[in-house]
Length: 303
Image: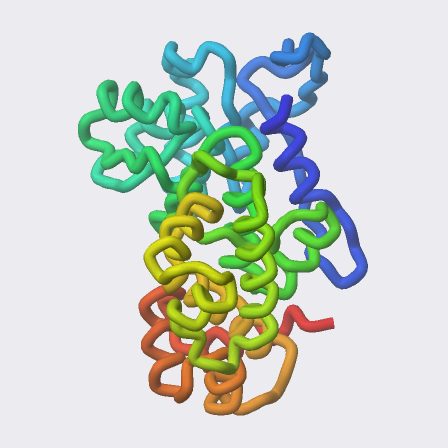
């Protein structure tokens, strides 16, 4: 039920300048579907609905250890074959793996079942730590609420940062978490004064992206040694200060490319990359396209 709720919330028809998604739930046996919370869900559409879908997301189901019906696997394979983006949330990855769509690719699932996925499908490179893995025409996401991260990533990829951020704000969610961020954190909620100091430093860094922001300076502001700061940062965020800053700078650069006419050189300085050449190199490496190509693709989403 959580998985169905996540995708229906993200791909709701909001209007207000946002994309009007044609969202539907489908199954191989339309009708009343029992859910894990005891409430029945009426699914009107059969697998024929997949024949025209641009995006197909396989949701988790209770009996995921048993492969889906052949008709489901055939429908997933056919959708992928005609060019649809096929994704999976949580143990929905087992359906994609059973269809052979993950063979030779990286994938993730709920950390609790990553070992089982790797054992049953040795041709799949399973990353048990990633929030989501994007392999182009196939994407997989981790369990539970990480489904939001997968969906927002797909929105960002297809519609740009402005659209993804607007929907994230509507859902009161972080606008972006990098796919390589850890699924499970030992200290996910601030527990002491050190975490309060860390939170304050991160807020300060967001407002000073145009500055170099070396780790030593962040640690000094948090009143910690550099080593203690790095350790506390990883425990609280699941990533390194460098990776966090890089993701933040790229996200801010995306927004400026979409929503302003600022020259790329000026945007590079505003987000802390220093020069257009550095921004371009990071953009090509992380987003697959240079900044100007990104602007041409997504500037139309403004307004």
